[in-house]
Image: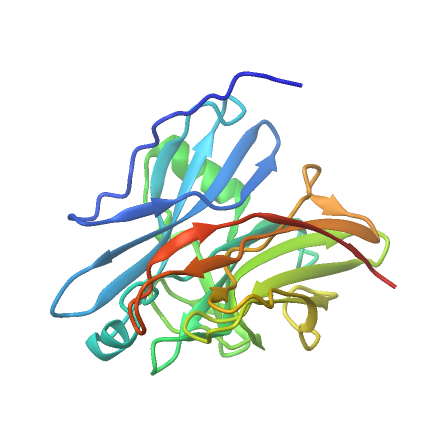
Length: 274
């Protein structure tokens, strides 16, 4: 089957140059689509600043409007120097958790990885925002960063650029989905940047906060390849016991210590949960 492929320009993050804006997961709530996108900028000599941005679409994703930043991760110069290409990369995974606290409010949970002192990403954090409050902010053209709160000190009280609680020691680029038959959330992550490994892991949780130890689901054994950007295939927002995932191992063709992606593949893998 063949068909037309359409592309659209999205208003980028208003960072001063150079910057990047990578599209992230999309969540449907009513007739509106919400996207959380990764944004970052190098600001020598101060280091790197990573952010997760909020965008929305009312025409089934044909056009998108940038709303503003949700959360940020300011990094030190030392972290930037150790891993300049990954220092601002928080990754981004999101899931809609309806009435999470039994208070009648629906939340978007945003999962991200956090940098440690050596510039690598081994800690999973989470922030959340009330979907109805986000819609009201869009209508009023008001700031949305104050609506997002990171999990900090065992509660959702952390602000925009606070460090978040460590939910799990894991790799990067989280992808999260609901598995109806198991009544659990599933988390897909990759080996951390700079590890020199191409491994992909799966964890599960009943509440989206306490996660099981990561289980290896796929390993790329070719030398020189490393793990990058795994995601669930879940067009309806949930998966069954037999689920499909997309994995993106990359070939690092640069000299030692200088990451240069020269080849990127997409692998489709089917995982059966028991």
